[in-house]
Length: 501
Image (tube, rainbow, N blue to C red; front, side, top):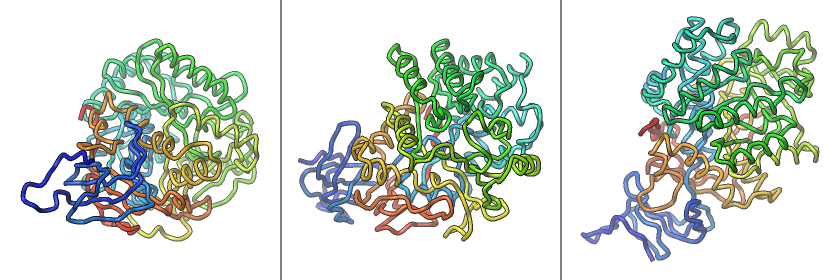
């Protein structure tokens, strides 16, 4: 029987588009069955066991229809980056770990340029530090992060007066629509616990989460990954703030069992800590990051030759070469391998972080760079010889191809749940608009992905930038971004997501 919100009164087909005979997965109700789905305007109007009639009816038999994926952690906030994410099934890509020093400026720029998927930003703690303490000029968040990485003051502990000034600025950016507070404290480990705790207090008072890259990545005392994770847990326990831990797969390094146990125990007592991960044993950052100093690599259990410097594509041969690159181009993109998924022990370690209960899948997508290090902003197809971390193009395809089909460690409905409803619920208290997403129900936003369950997979790797395959249709606000497998490279269907919306 149809659940119908827009019945026709004049005999015309009541729906703009009908997806017929899809395997519909709604993670909130647990629906997993063959249905017709009717869309009118930007809204899901009907979910029906019986056939529906639309102005356009698409037979998607054998396909999965699910909510579009919600990526909490995307630094790929360019048209090119978001087109690649659309091909990976993403309908909402949010920059929450780094955020923006000026949320209103970032949103205005995105709206002016147009985005194919929904977008939004947190209020950035680190970029605000760069702007307030080092007079860094306001710019695109990732460009600002890379260009000012060698400035001195943002990495240091601040006076009480400066902390107050910083907190006032961050609070104003939340009021300007910032989705919580992005806290890249792992890049400024010398800033001190008191400031981080004050930031958590401010987040609780504002009613928004923080999104933290934890302070340390190390298995050697002092200053281990466990210590960094416990700081986040303690801040939540001590303030009541909702603290979200970014990419627990990479920042936990080889201490995931202790960290997962601590998080689980804290959650069982009501401490508001949430987690995310991506299905790769490698990460990506700027080569000038504090934790990539040559003398600190042994703390991560890696050597310089586990780093690929993307502007040249080279594997960094020696500690001396690493020091040279850090001095000459501290904002240069790098990929680092901390675990080898081909090795059973490393693969099992990675899986334990991915499979922690209610961990969201989040890509940590990063910009695509050309030889020489320039960012690819608005080009399609992606220029040859460009490089990026494959999570930027295939995180979700890999989730369904590797975790679901190949390893069988996630069921298909559970994978949908972790890519949609889990991230939506992490945001819902601060962003009520998210309550209309991540559902296939009448009245929900028509942000939908239709994909082939047997062929949805990543195609890119560490040497080739390529979009995922298998997404047949993608709707953002009821507008086709992908139609019959064809990407609308001019799409501007994306809309801003703001706190309090």
